View (cartoon, one colour):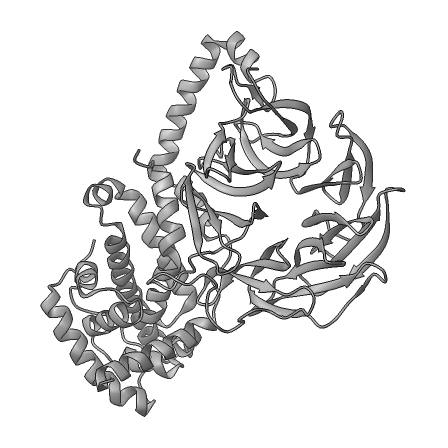
Amino acid sequence: MDNDQQTAARLRLALDREVAQHQLSPGAWPRLERRLRRQPWRRAAIAAVCAVIVAAAAAVTPYLWHRLSGPVASHPQPQHGPHLVIGARAHVSGLSLTTGYGAVWIIGQGVIHRIDPATAKTVATIPTPGTGGKPPSGIATGAGAVWATSNGGRPGVYRIDPRTNRVTSFIRLPPTPIAITVAHGRVWVTEAKEGPGIVVRIDPRTNRVSGPPIRVGAGPGEIVSSAGTLWVTNSSSTPNVPDVSRINPATGAVANPHGGSWGGTDRLGNAKVSRIDAAGAGSLWTTDVNVVQRVDPANGHVTAAIPVPHAWHVIFWHGLAWALTGVAPSGLGTLVGIDPAANRVVVHGAPFRGAPMTITAGPAGLWVVFANPDHTSLELVHLVLASGPN
Amino acid sequence: MEPSRHDGLAQLHQRYYPELVRLAFALTGDWSLAEELGQEAFVRAWRNWGSIRRKQSAPAYLRATVINLARTRLRQRLREIRAWRDVAIPRQAEAAASPDVLRALARLPARKRACVVLRYYLDLSEADTAAALGISVGTVKSQTARALQRLRPLLEDGSAPPLTPLSGNEGGP
């Protein structure tokens, strides 16, 4: 290595060290969107568009009344082959949800709602005191209980007994518990804090923290369990780009903690696999720009990129990968099903229009929270897979 | 199908925002300012979307914008520091000047500083660096080589004055 290369390498190393001491502030894109919305000419354009819409609405009121009477309007076109049909649906006030113990559980403001899957109606409202007015942030079921994280006034995890619909325990945790999952006999909670984040284990038999915190990348968020591994998405890891940490649930060891991004990086240092959404069909699943990606859990390599315009989140259910799509800024989008045997979309769209916000799977179908087209209300919709023409 | 302006900008933001903040940080030594400049670059890209999309040169445009914004803001900051020199110690300028590597970079002239950061920190090719700075590939080579020559003793020395504003006509929007 000549002198110039040595100097360049030294400069790069030193700058990497400096940058590693900082983290990107979260929410950069929403802040930018808000700023762009404030552009004066944009305000004028919006006012003009609103005037046109109001005029059009006045002219076609009966038609609009029919189409927009609910947050989710019906899709008129008949579909052939496997397709989704709407089951129960109801207005809700929260977004984070999960299923288990014969119910859908959805987080509200200072409460958790128990939803009857047959009717989508709330059958119990469980107070979660001490959240400081903020709703709990994550929710999961397992080990005989419903678990919800709170990072409001009193940070920790609520344990709810699904037989009595009451909070039976509260496990105090460091200040910012984010996501939660139940796997391998433990409750796993990601904790964001300054610098590297941590994952905390809770023993559901004792309701106590079990073992030392597991150090992962910066800004840990969602946590997915699959193939004997826990996959943690770090939203702001060094050098301030997302990547993935892998935890051995038996030992709590993090694989290759200092070895760089799993699956490698591109030439700008960005992790090629920056997030894991779901697991199924022997693969991990995530999205990149306009594609759904399959990732080999053995090495982090992307084995397939399936074109799905505006895909932003994937779950796995009923042998298919289901991708939520949304077109900013309205978020209006849909849900498509991908056959992992063929790596292609086999369920096109969904029988409604709206902005899909969150999704979870239950035994009989998918549960999606939609915002209506103008984002003024939320509706929980049960979607059931059917075959043949509708 | 070509993405809308909003979607196109969202894709660019997802891909390039961290890089632009790192670039701005390497040029200014101030992380908060770097994030602000990164955001501002996208606001300007939004306003000039038509020309960017036609040229297919969004990354070069964004980098050039950050470089020019960094130069402008550092000039402003230097003026403020001079104006307040006898009144108070400018805390942010002190913080920005503290790390040795940033001090060493600060001693480089503007174009050399930008060349060496783009080439050896962001790993851009000579052609991409030239595009971002609006100069020829030959100039990139010569400026980078001279910058490294000047950096070598500075990185070993560790002493350096506060950050100076970028100056010169680096090109860009």
